[in-house]
Image 1 (cartoon, rainbow, N blue to C red):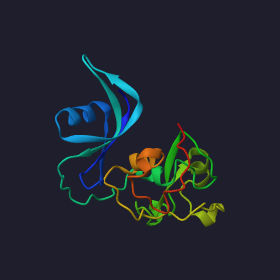
Image 2 (cartoon, rainbow, N blue to C red):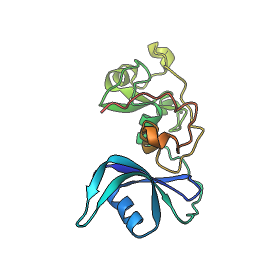
Image 3 (cartoon, one colour):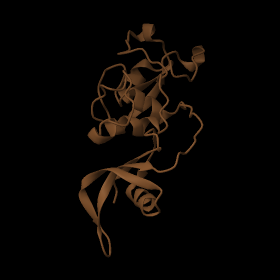
Length: 180
């Protein structure tokens, strides 16, 4: 029962990703309907239930438009867990200020990148020109604001069934598998 379930509003707008237990409670309380189920089944005391993958709420939930917060996890997700200097994927990553803070570089979407420890040590608190390093792509704030967290949204776009319900954005559609 450790699977994630995509929760949609009654107008099919993605609201959340919850765990299997929460989805089953929503179904049994009559608050949600199963739109897609996995091949596996959940055995209860008297019946078997197909394990849900996508559920839709029966009543509309009004939510304020979320804001995409600048966080370590969001930067890693935006950069696909890849060092923006050498292009390698690592488990142990850091954040790097392109323009060092001591030179007035801020903590912004456009000034932070995902970086491996080796490249971060090489660059230290110098500018790109001083060390002769080049960024693989110019960092920017994502143009979209998903209702679910950025990391869960990116993972969700890799699920074939969920992809039908998640809006795709040009800079996210081609992200390869995440490094585990």
